[in-house]
Amino acid sequence: MVELWFEDIEWRDVGCELYPRCLECPLERCVEEEPRLRQRLKLEMRAERMRELRAKGRSTAEIAREARSTGRLMIQRRWRRWATAWTS
Image (cartoon, rainbow, N blue to C red; front, side, top):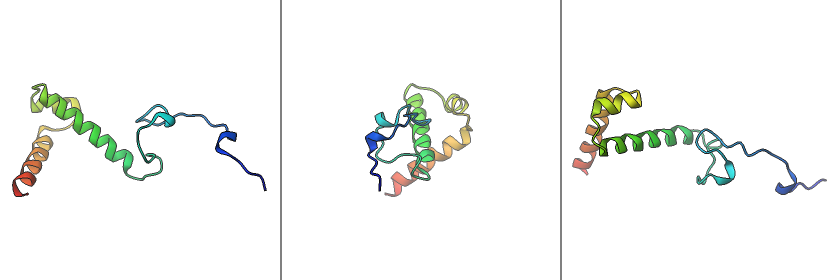
């Protein structure tokens, strides 16, 4: 039986669409291994970008246009967050 060590295997560190190199990735689990992790991370990054634009004073319409979303969807999300905070 042949023993292979990680150091003995040649592989290219190509990363993914979220991070350019696997060895420099800050995530504990790889998005390739976790089924919905990639989608969740993309949505979180998008939501963070929208919050940044709102903090800079952009209007809902401007943020929706940049996010390729509708203003109505953004208002619904804001309403859900407010309703959740109000009932908690």
